[in-house]
Length: 478
Image (cartoon, rainbow, N blue to C red):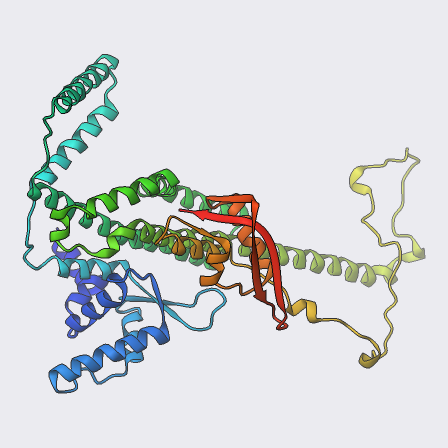
């Protein structure tokens, strides 16, 4: 740790500035209560300002005086300013209300404050066993000698066979309640740390997105060189240790078998008496769904980066087409300028007879078969009916929102029918949204379609007409 480095971090690092702020207790407690405790990634400005207003009112009532005189919205703007960086203020796609997200540095500071208190139970055995397990994994994964690997597997097999014989004789080695509580607390701590890691990974990807935008805005070279640099930097992120670890974690988490196994294990552990004595947080039963929602935010960040690159390509193509038309007009203007300066109407001459050459590059450009006639007269709008309603009646169905509805519905049950799902989340876009649910069932979600049974789906369209659709019974499974 270098003195100059720490001095710079003290002035610029958001987590350090939060800890040194005058109102740090109020800020940290409110942000923990609003974002970390309920595990919310983003909150709308009006909702967050209302929560802060209620929280400040409570603090004033307890203290008997006005401790924080500024309006709640003013505090939010201060916390999201560049010189502080405790919140990230942005506008989601298609919305005109700003939203706030907790920055990774702020979450680090709050987690550090939460760990300052004396822990009621400090376990050492489980962490030592974790060290041994990690060392064994490293050795097993790097051992090049086949005989050594076979010998290790034979040793494990012998230990498993001995344990099977011991259990068959009625001797069971059970964990002590202290060991159960120790391992459960370590598991819970690791599970909560994973949520913080998602926010840090999302922050890194947003940093890459911001760097790409800045690079595009200041680039004065060729498009090919810029794209090569952008995609090269993106590959560096994807192929880094962090990128590979996140991709492996996401693939493992998206496995339906792993999700079912994790749900079963959590339910069984939380039902143990030593664990119930700890009064664990009930949200641990759905921690893997919180991981999915946090990972979905990270995936959206990567999608925005791809969208930015696509927009750049479209803009550059328009600029190049405009440049081509400008060059063509300049050529035409120069041809008209020299038309009256040619003597005897001769533009070019051939010194001697020569064979006719038909070079590919000598072929004329494409000429339209006819020249349109543009009439200089006003158009009577009343006599021409131009249907423009179709331009404003386009329907876009958000597949991610429908997938999130299915995941939320399956958090409290193993399966749900399409009609029961639509009772909780009614159709907002009619038949198009219903067709998207069917597409999700056949392509992305685990589902079962029973052709022997039918269900009736009813909704009201934009014109107020009651619609009904008869479909085979569709069941979504967790």
